Length: 148
Image 1 (cartoon, rainbow, N blue to C red):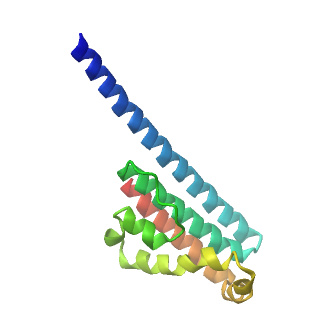
Image 2 (cartoon, rainbow, N blue to C red; image 1 turned 90 degrees about the horizontal axis):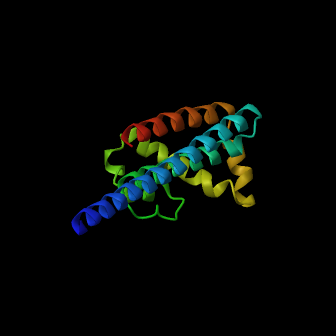
Image 3 (spheres, helix red, strand yellow; image 1 turned 30 degrees about the vertical axis):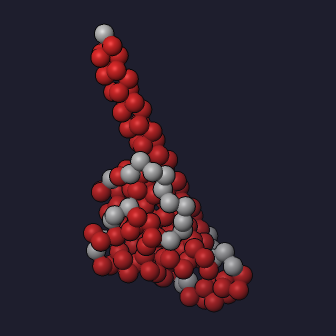
């Protein structure tokens, strides 16, 4: 009887941990999708500065979902996409085009937040460039989701 109770407790703990990890993955995945949808809305209204910012946020959160799908630890508290990808042990398997794209997205998080950078950044974020950022965000996000 005692062994049966221990086994039940052990299995319950495993199920709880799996559910908890699944909830964290779901949480980050849903936020990633929300941020991507917000980037689309910003594109439609011509708010190009925030297209890049929200695309960065979307990739950051899907990387955190991936991290939580592989590790019991909380996702690192950082906005660095390269760092998150490396901590999640996915960076090395990223195709070069996605590594390059992470380099494009990386400054869009910081520069969008600080007024001294906004003017210069806004000039570089044309409608065409933002459409490319959206397209590449969707491709990278899809690639990561397939690995979950």
